[in-house]
Figure (cartoon, rainbow, N blue to C red):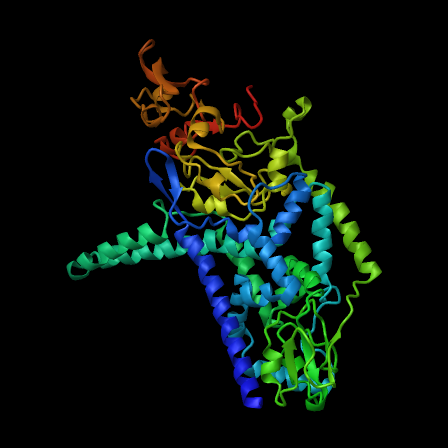
Amino acid sequence: MSGQKATRLKSARFWRRLSQVFFLAFFLYLIFRGHGEPVAPDGWHLRNAVNPDVVFLANPVTWVLSVIASRSLIEKSVSLMVFFVGLALLFGRVFCGWVCPLGTIIDASARLLRPAHVEISLDRQSERTKSPRSTLPPLVTHRTKYYMLVVLTVAALGGVNIVGWFDPLAILMRATVFGVVPAAHWWLRTSADFAEQFPVLGSNVRPLRVWLEQVFFSSTPHSYGQAALHVGIFVLVVGLTRLHRRWWCQYLCPLGAFYGLVSRLAPLRRWIRTPNCNECGVCGNSCRMQAVVGAAAAAVDEGDCVRCMECAERCPRGGITFSFLPAAEKEARSEAAALDLGRRGLLVSLASGIAAIPLIKMTPERRSNAAAVGMDVPQDEWLLRPPGAQPEPQFLRLCIRCGECLRICPQNALHPTLWEAGLEGLWTPRVVPRLGYCEPSCTLCSQVCPTTAIKPLRVRTKRNHVRIGTAHVDRNRCLAWTNLEECGVCQEFCPVAPKAIELRGGGQGRGRTVGENLPAPEVIVQRCIGCGICENKCPVEGQAAIRVHRRGETRHQITS
């Protein structure tokens, strides 16, 4: 019987690891494979059949808090989210132990950050001193993640959606999109360029390089100024494993807190066969989530147990099992530890959420003269949002900073903000035309946005009715206006028909004969859509001589 039980538990461990590898591979597949490609005449389409937004449509915390903050229903399928919530109601916190890609990476990193000899040493020290295996600040306990969820919920009730700052899937997505993918593409191009210098290798490497770039990377190499920041945040989250395995998951993760609450209702429980259990403590020491409470092996915190079943596998006497019903023996028992958040902790988290609302909203960057006419827009007139973006207040309430739109942009036009839109707009997407322009026939960002912060668009609608902003010529920098040099690059690349930029007489070269003019660019405001290709292609070094500002954007109808 014990041999059959051991085989069954080893099988459970095998299937858990297989599930973790599958979902991590699927996550990476959506990132590396989920790019767009031009398809005439309908514009750009996703390469793969699975829309990458499923990663966040399966996330109940980001979806619910976005709905609360925006006071609107997100009109996208929630079937996958309902499935995972139902899974938690039936089996417990299995998402964290079997599905979450960040949890999988943390588990894998534990082999390096907390190898077996470290665990054994801490176990022995714990037995001698009767103290916990990791020393933590008093404010950081298993309750902290629940307090974090309370703060985020209260802030959402006040119209501030900052769940994306702490969501594990968003953290992993930003680190992968901003750091891992660009670095992988750079290494591919650099290695291929080096290999192609050798005639023997060049003929074999070149086709492989072309195939890899077509399959796994965007047509334009991407780079982001905040790559080191977001990779550093990811490394910090994973590095916390040095304190304890699954430290992030146990103490801070808001998604884990949600599933921890739901899992308390699950009928699948951990049972102890009393005749076989001598309370040796092996199960408690081996638990990656410290879910076994105290010395009693039967007491377990259902909100922290991720159903990894490692305790049952390591029990030397076969005294632990997981099932919906108690084992056949009458002595089998299961004790669920009570959820004691503490009145003081709840009051502090409620007060913190209430205080965060004005602190996040009331920043100088959020002030604008447009507020006098009832428009809440950023002060920075060069802050451009993606085409189809909701009006600024609603956009900030819906955006979860997932980075999907930035990753999918074929021209690398979208980049995360820092302080340009104030603290409330931290890490939200903005168009930076000098680094990349908005392709007029592309609506990919609206297709992959999981919360409709960027409304779904058709190519025809975007071309005819959407304006990101309006181009403006700086005559003090334009070559045709100041140096009397023949230059019509902006007019040449303008994609609008008829052209939104015309070359007209008026260029006045400094030091030239009075009246000696050349055709110089002028913007026809009524035709300009604000795509930014003129700014991107401008040959002037540094800041372009023609720039796109926010005036004229259709989402606010600012015309002056």
